[in-house]
Length: 306
Length: 239
Image (tube, one colour):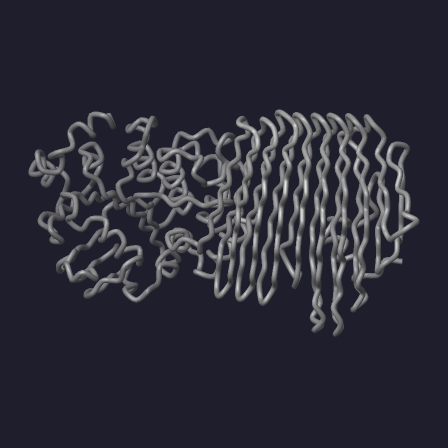
């Protein structure tokens, strides 16, 4: 059964008011709560460890899989292994997401280890949203690890968002790209209070014509700490771009470290990183339109992370 | 009516940029002109509250706004189009126009302001105000936000600067339309003769001092050869 807190978390992380259309598996407080499969998408529980295999038949088009996780029991800690097999020529959307409500004294954590095996010429959009709430002393911790393996001609777009309430996170994303594969990553992170967020990307561009674009936009408020690192290895004629753009506020601390390695004369790799406070003239402009300084700041931050 | 009473402004390096400026502005279109470095832009900033005068008072329709913050002045009815518009990563043209209007706008309302400045609304309404917009585009968007504000006292700091392919005539039309359809005062800082030509009154500022202030027909003939001096080539390009 999904209680009221669970329902509200589901709305935050998966924008779900009711059970979704298509395949789904909703995990509540450490157990699979409800599941649905379709003719093309099968979901099977793993036998050797916690987690599921999601198997999408080759050629499946315009279908979606929702696999949200909610934790409302204080002090629950879990590690979940989910493997996604996306067949050749698919065009599908996978929506994951985790919401933690912790009103107790113990730390709650969810570590999702996701592996994607994306078939030839398949197209995948992967949306992941992390959210925490609750006023307990216990921390809300999420450490997602995402492995993405793109076959020839595959296209993957990942949208990862963590805007509120996660005290401690280490996000690791590892990708391998075969010939003509394309990976696009858009990450948005906001930390406040004494939160701590680490995001590490590592992409191996192994195939000729592969390309990768990683864009991270973050806002660090109060005394929060963020670290972004991005490693691109160009092992073939390929193009890679990684960008980290951060707004720093209060007494926060942000670091960004690029690491580019080219092992092919036709590999073209670019890294951009910018960290800075909100420009004074941006605040002034919005104030001349009638916003207070605090309202102007709020609009700039929400626009930046939109 | 906006009254400036004995306004002086001294910069941190102690240079006096405005010296005892007193003006009463209540006409529909007033243009401030004068040589570079004469204090025109500083005066605009003093009116909008971006810099505080070292001495003097600012009165808007009888209300002393001298101590008002930028936000309070905006709410009191002052609007400023920046000479160099600000860019924002993430905010869209629609966002800025909505903030300017101070209320939710329908798509067609937001689009009408863009059409006024010669931008095809469909192409621009959801564009981010980032570096992908050209100087001319962002300048026109800046002017559109002032139209959306509809304030009783609108200041334009060199609106013609950076206007690229859009014809200069269209800019003049915007001011003429504002004059026809809105009841407020438009204060334009410009050295362009054709903008001076639409003014009811002209203020000539040099070295921080108002040297001349009066009806256009009286002031303009005295300026030919001064306001335009040194930038004929630029003016030709704008034409």
